[in-house]
Image (cartoon, rainbow, N blue to C red):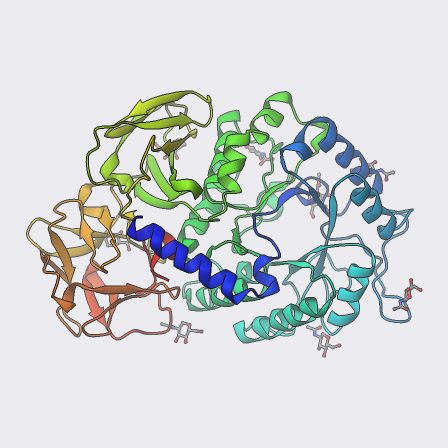
Length: 539
Ligand SMILES: *[C@@H]1O[C@H](CO)[C@@H](O)[C@H](O)[C@H]1NC(C)=O
Ligand SMILES: *[C@@H]1O[C@H](CO)[C@@H](O)[C@H](O)[C@H]1NC(C)=O
Ligand SMILES: *[C@@H]1O[C@H](CO)[C@@H](O)[C@H](O)[C@H]1NC(C)=O
Ligand SMILES: *[C@@H]1O[C@H](CO)[C@@H](O)[C@H](O)[C@H]1NC(C)=O
Ligand SMILES: *[C@@H]1O[C@H](CO)[C@@H](O)[C@H](O)[C@H]1NC(C)=O
Ligand SMILES: *[C@@H]1O[C@H](CO)[C@@H](O)[C@H](O)[C@H]1NC(C)=O
Ligand SMILES: *[C@@H]1O[C@H](CO)[C@@H](O)[C@H](O)[C@H]1NC(C)=O
Ligand SMILES: *[C@@H]1O[C@H](CO)[C@@H](O)[C@H](O)[C@H]1NC(C)=O
């Protein structure tokens, strides 16, 4: 058993030992439908029943898409005299309990939207001060999933968001059958000049709920409404770019949410749509389609029902793939899959079709093997055998190749390997042959691909006999020959994103002029929050 797998097992055992209801409420990322990207406020009963029928007839339900979630604008503008929210009877003539039953009878569940503040983002009544009433109402209607937005809060401080979302957690957990809790809180703290509050919110959302929207909404049909600065493909890359900073938070039962698969948005090529799906699956992200499902093309339904990719999304380990390397054109990601398999995802950000080869050493397989591994191309379904590298051939512009690597006999031995980057500056930790280190724009060179084995050492592929070495307060961190007894070379990673020296207790820091030093650990500061290969491995 590899060190990584041992670590994961310990974690899984720890989680099941804790056996808090919230941790087993949603053992796999949710899959389903939400109306928002297409309808905005023009949702109604017919849309939902027609969508459910289409999800059955198109085979989406059979592939695992089993939720239909209402978004904003479903209620009347006023609460009832007794304080409860009321559905809009023009939009939902049979009522929401009827709709929930309609869904349940067909093997779906119904989800709902509300807002933690006084009003929803669309101006409908918010749940602030009505938490108990609203939770009981949703539950009595037969709803099992709540997306809680964060507009119009009493104030915009991180502590207020924590108080209100924490209260919701308690209220939902007291229900006989707790609702799945999707928290939009982190999105209100993303993209700040100072990311400390964003990181702080990310620290508590996994304790309160099952998924959290960490950044921008995906584009709606009418895209300029939210984000005048980006459209089309750039918006997919934007949300993906936020998600990869947060891998350390994800675990079975809690999922980072990079938002909807807006499949029928006008400005995506088919390759971009397929990438969207392949990347979200690689990240074990929620797969919530926000599109007019009855009109999806066979090609779109075809990729959305790719069972090999869905299996990667729904993998029991629930891991988010982490970055191996990134150079402006190619992103390579990898993760452990249940049963000892390995995922390799290769994204072509370039504007031309091209091929890219990933050596085994980069996905954490260090020793050479005489028996080749079996490789499945998850798009074509074709098998091949590989023994020291994987080539993604003719990846279309903005396309993504995805592979599943399996051993034919013994489990694959893995050393977590990949980029170490500052999740604020996005600079990569870079080693040099001379022994110095720096933070530099990521270029996918060996000097930026690091192994983080279980012994706590950190070694770049430039020379794996050398280790990242702490020299003490405010001094540069350097590379020197690994010595198993040297405490200067042992580092501890935690969910705060800090990489801490065992010797001095100081944190790896991106200093001015991109210097790499160890300095006093602050509270999740821009200079000290770092992504490591393998995500939660050292948590
Ligand atoms: C329901 O909503 C859809 C999508 O917004 C719209 O096309 C349709 O006309 C609406 N139907 C009714 C009965 O309101
Ligand atoms: C509150 O009033 C609404 C509308 O009159 C009613 O449907 C609902 O059952 C009431 N809720 C409770 C808890 O009595
Ligand atoms: C929200 O409602 C509460 C309670 O009614 C009130 O005290 C507060 O001022 C309201 N906040 C805003 C921003 O409207
Ligand atoms: C960043 O925000 C945190 C939390 O609000 C605060 O404690 C810290 O002082 C801020 N850092 C800087 C450099 O402004
Ligand atoms: C686009 O957004 C504007 C502003 O909210 C809204 O008035 C309009 O109806 C939207 N258009 C569509 C097609 O949804
Ligand atoms: C699609 O892209 C074109 C050109 O880049 C732009 O003019 C248009 O507004 C975009 N449409 C949407 C719906 O984003
Ligand atoms: C692809 O083309 C776009 C638009 O012309 C450009 O902004 C972008 O930098 C190009 N990407 C690469 C990787 O060359
Ligand atoms: C230092 O980091 C900045 C981004 O924060 C980058 O633009 C710059 O190129 C880096 N300098 C060096 C020498 O790598």
